[in-house]
Length: 217
Image (tube, rainbow, N blue to C red; front, side, top):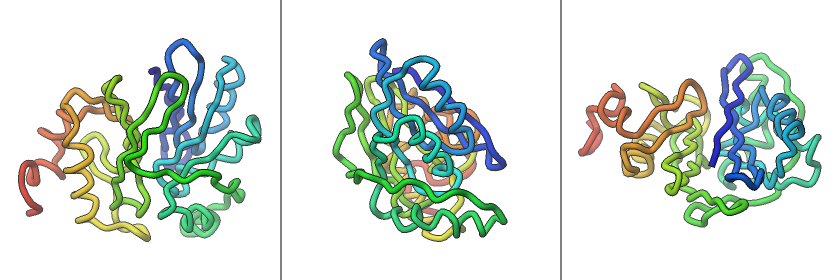
């Protein structure tokens, strides 16, 4: 599996294309402000787009969904139901930051944690990781030692919990059970900033070190 990164906008959000081997089958994950570049990549390399997958429905992770749909009008959009209200309220989210965004196309399919998502010969395990957002999920590919973790954890930091639906204790539980439980060499593709690994964050993330192996301080 190959992961291509597309970063843009004032939030510096990372959107991703996950491409399955030599088949050119792919999924778009969290198309944000750089979705136009992502769409050009799909068209320019004749990629076979099977789905749009959303880790959660915060503004910066969904504002480019319509640009992907513009080149693939029938592509399904997958979202956890606990974030559907937030997704539909994207314009209200934008107003909180003094921004305006288009209404996004309606999600078509429901993400169910524990049920794998298959595309081409590849697949993701879907892990439920709320705390930053109520319906946040992680897409984990154990065969490729990588996970797309959205805004659950970053290199040296964690997702914010002061937005509507956020909860610090819930987030810390999600990180312990859904991220730190993965092998240390698992590469984490984050919603903002550079990639990291589970081992690096387990030993060096200042938000996590006090909690490693025990309950919340």
